[in-house]
Structures are given as C-alpha cells and as structure tokens.
Image (cartoon, rainbow, N blue to C red; front, side):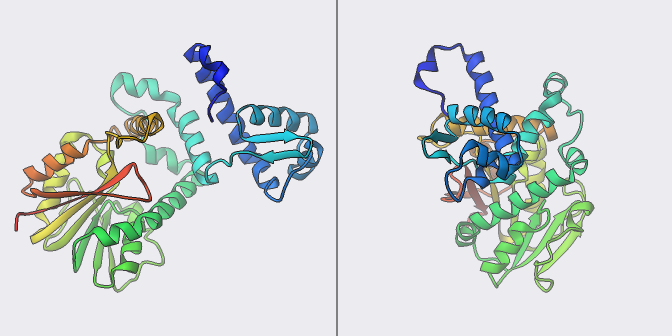
Length: 325
C-alpha cells in the first residue's frame, strides 16, 4: 500500500521496514479472517474481535496498523474495508516465498547454486503447493480465451513442461480439433488433472532436457517453462523442441518479459524483479527478454515470429514462431 506523502522524507531503509510491517499486518488480517468478517458491513473493534475469535486489545492494535496502511477505515460507523487484498492463495503464497523461501537467498546469490530447489521446498509444504496449484489453474483459465484465439491451427500439440495440464485442459475446451501430449517429470504428469479428456490428452513422463520428445507435432507449447532455466539451457530446449515439429509446425512461448511494457510504472518492474530473484533462488533460472527468445527461436530455424499481448495479464506475452512459408 502507498505510504502517506509526508513520509517521503524518511530514509528509504525505514520506508522499506514500514512497508514490510504493513504487508505482514495485512497477512495477519488475511489469516485471521479480518477482511472476510467485514464483508457484510462495518463492525466495532469488539464485534470484529468476537467474530474472528481474537483478543480485543490485539485486534485494536492490528486494526490501527491496517488503517495506517490504507487497508481499513475506522470511524464512527465502525471498522470497514478500504482496500481489499489480493486473492487469499496469492497473498499467502507470496508471503511464504518472501519470508520463508528467501531465507537463504544470500547463499544462492553468493554461490550461484540454490541450497534447495523450489519444488523440493514445495513438497515439504503441502498447503503451499496446493495454493500454487490453484493459482496455476486460475491463471490458465484467465488467459485461455486469448491464447486459444492466438494459437495457429494444430491437430497435434506437445505441451513441454505442461505440469498437471492446466493450459492443455483449457485449450481442449476451446479447440475441439486438438490432441495434446503433456510431457513432464513423472511426479508431475501422474497428477494430470482429472478433467483432462482421456481421448484427447496423453501424459508422457520424462526429462525434457534429455529424453526423446517425439516428432511430427503441429504445435509445441513452452508455457512458463523457459524462466526455469538459464540461457544456454533455454537455447538447447528450444532447439530440441523445434526438432519435434512437422515441416509447418510452430512453437508458442508463454512467459513474462524481462523488460516490462512501457507505461505500467515502477510496480511492474518491482514485480518482475521479485519474480526474477525468486526464480534464481529456486531454480537457478530467471526471466528472459523476448528479443532473446526470438533470437534463440531463429537459431532453431523458426524465424517467422509474432508477439501477442494478453489482456488478462499485461506482464505476460505469447511469442509464436514458425518456419518461413
């Protein structure tokens, strides 16, 4: 939340500390059910404390902080919501990433090697993993209409690193002409979504950096995959993906562009930087410039490229590349 204008003279480290305090207080409000309790209308502090099962003095202190940071209002009518936090899954997931997973970020930055992989960390936290699964499924649904409209005609699709099949399921719902093979690690594809149509979706287990990917596909999807790898691995993955294509096939890359679109302001750059460092911390990867992705696709023989903005997610783009016709 923005801090009051009169605070602008405060040194940046103090502002950072205050911002972290406001964020942590918001998370406490989410976990305690403060915002849900206030949805029907205003409550007094005492009524709010009773509703969420909290100590009135503690709730009053939390309310004061949340008022200061613009999340709540407190006036003669009682306590009301002034600014609703993001979805619960998103807020709790990012809190755990920033305050738990980043705990040893200094070691990763110093050595260049993550102390523990992101998915290893997730396996130790089933609730966090479940939140991320719901976030992935929701994001795929939000983007599905734009993606389905932008992708070229294809009868056979290879979804590399397709996880549990979120994008595959949404594509099948909108494109009855496609059959999709989801290729990912065994522990991932065994959890393929139950609503994936069995007559149109096949799961294949393997390591997409080393194992045979097949051939003859009209379209290859690399959706939220390249950001998990450093540039040389990306170039090799794109080269391997291109070898699976039919003569008229295409590759579609979905990811965040390392360079935020003009006009979105510093918050966009801040989010992308946070995401980039999280990828480095967890996988030794990071965000890539779309110009670089286009160059790597060109090296693989796919020189006809176009970039499709996505209205539902301004920080993501779809890059589609094929061979010259």
